[in-house]
Image (cartoon, rainbow, N blue to C red; front, side, top):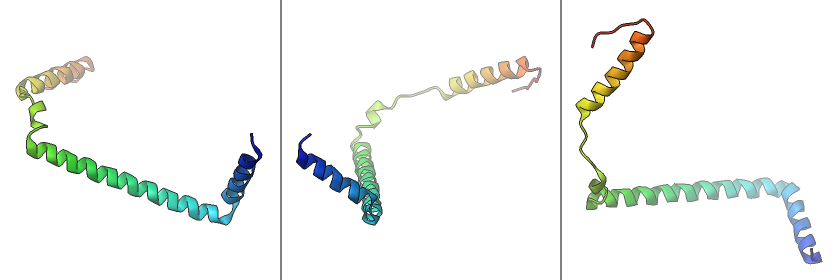
Length: 89
């Protein structure tokens, strides 16, 4: 390792252990939170644009809600009967 890198790393260690390090990492945490918040805002704007243009709607499919309810009812009815508890739907 070249000497200049040793000095830079040593300087980093001094900064890391100094009182200024807490301020530095506090500012770094705030910057990270801000960048995550901005990313979230852009993601939501993109989602709104996709919904308005119909791009997301193309992925929608029709489902038979009655079939889903029947399946869930059968599962829970079997579980209830297996435990000795019977329910009438």
